[in-house]
Image (cartoon, rainbow, N blue to C red):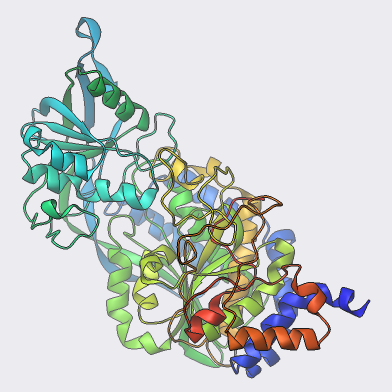
Length: 602
């Protein structure tokens, strides 16, 4: 009976045990005292006066201002509007900090299919130019088309490139692959003699919806490991007009080429890159009463692309970040260290606002104790992904127990170098200094099967099969579909509660979260490449993953749990110790309980 009663307590007991092994005893004494605060935060956000507030603020903001491109007048008006809101709500030290930002303007644009349509008919192709693209000549460009699937095929057919418009019909295997074509194809095509580069939009699903995004200004690509060696070189000064086409139109052009039909397109683009323009980051604070010089950053970005309303990316997440701070203020929770809300400018077109903030505040780096950025839409929040030391990770995991009632208690280590920007471009400068970093870990609302990770969850980092989707976010990302219709008020409330709990913990602890080497993200497959079988209860439930038999730390944990009479529950999988072949202490302790990366609902 005693063992049965104790089984539900296993996650918390094991977390406390890990904290003791990490010599985090002072934290263990503080976290129980915060439980009432955590409960009040969650109640206020999801059932109290905070309910629906982030959603309503976002809706009014995007309905009034619309999209907010870097360098535009409407962005500056929206920045003034946000500051007025912060002042009206009584935040401290509300101010702007200057930043010079890119000013690129789209202008008129079109693409027309001239051949091989029957009877001399013409068809408008749905397109959207990419940020920093150069324009076409005033008369436009009219040329034959070469369709290729990837860099390798481009290299094979390079003799056919001169004088042609090159269309990249790459199969969808995730955003990280798609953006390489969006970012760099205009350089490579230019150097090979092409006249324009058109890209399959970077999303796994389309309803005639072209995507936009930034293209990279020409530079040296020597050493780019994703590019065939024969294409390495200095591309400085090489650029042709570049734009995204819809998935449907790219696939149509590909079919035409397979049939051996001659394809001809007329392309017209007026886009211009103007000199850098003055703009501002927007800042508001809750001053710390004991260590005001120490800072917890809670951020999102206010700019967007010039399509849709910029609601999902990133007005909604920005207002969720603001709501997390507003909750603390409304509840009268005065932090020991300062909680600083920042709305960044120019994230979409390169992160200039945040990089200049970092340069201005780099001398304060030792006082920045915790950072977060929300920039991935708001979906079904199931926890957080973090860059944290083993010690900080254990503290975060102990804090997460308060969120179990929201089904949002996952803490997912994402500390490998590859993932640092994935925790937020705007805070990545601080992350690389070792500052503990947090972002939301979310499940898509609409789920399509992806490769399984060793723990039985879908693996968002793996390369997905051709034409598979990657969750809802990239259905709408950088398209006209990014509107308030995408956002859900209840999910925004849950997200605000999750962020507020961790922010309060980080700001209220007597000592800041420890820095140190980050616990690496879990491997995408066990060593040797052997995949685990699907979980018998379905892919939405976790696998128990094996650990090394010679792990003294795991042996100590198991022995102590058995001594406490709780061994009967260990096999139930309440706590998961992830597979690790590496012997580092941080990784052993970083294989955290009940965590997975951005999984679909079970």
